[in-house]
Image: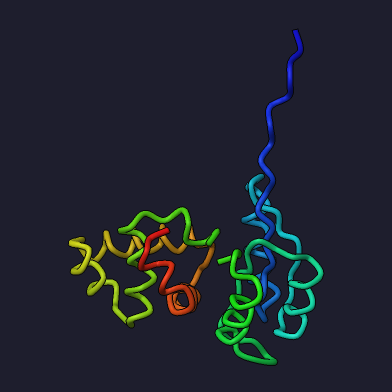
Length: 159
């Protein structure tokens, strides 16, 4: 009888783009603990991000909205046009209710307002939003807003 080794899933490759090295290192250290994630590169500029995306072909790019040589929002838009599969990975695991969070953040709603829409207390809404941001692989509401803005059609569908 022949036995086969269990299949190991291929990790999701991630490129980190943040002007602050300490932030990139912190995110990388956090992600290094997860065997399903492989941080393949880090940079702090738009120009290097373009080069690394072409070279490394990451599945996901986690970026800050403010970069020293350009706008992270515009970088996200350009990357979505050239490599749209990186963003399905980000929203594919969200439930319909969770997918509302980036849309509501994009609309400029506060935690209290999001809680009212989702029928949650403000404190519960804050915890819920934190969980969704973590699932999206972002740390800041502005990063979620960028995703919500650029992937609005995907988020409206839910998957």
